[in-house]
Image (cartoon, rainbow, N blue to C red; front, top):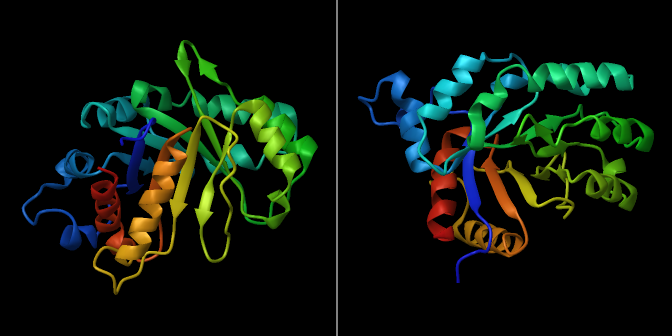
Length: 248
């Protein structure tokens, strides 16, 4: 039985030198890499925007190079998650949202707001931050995922705050910064970070089977964005494709 909601699977970015050997055809021009990657995957997390914004024209070009049904998520610039006062938060959030990212149009799946690993749960601070995330810009809906990496967020108070604002908490399968799934929005945002170089498909078959089963279960209630990030990065496209094949 097909899932009730879409499950999209991909990697972080599409430019990585080892992928020239493990993913891209040898004769493929660099300028065609996004077109090729989006034909094999169903989503990509744009993570370069964490360090440097792109122009509206660039986002528009990326959207045009990818097929219908393909989705990007975008990591917000790091300055946006380091502000101290509500006014500073609003200014930096608005600055990023108006930087051109909305030119992805319906190919914008969600924005990932990543906080520093040392950032602890502070109800007042995160309440103010979530309050300033726009759910709609113009007539375009915007969904938000919050990536936190501190054990203090494993509390019902954080779940309640996310649920109040319709935001997701990034699920992280990471040895150093694990974060469980929290069903607080109409989508789940997953970052799998344990791919291994010795595995052709990044993960053993049993683990890929288990993740596929998990995502199908989540998709009964929520849309799912899942990215193979970090780990043995050279294996991540193969891992994503192996998951896509299992999801049908």
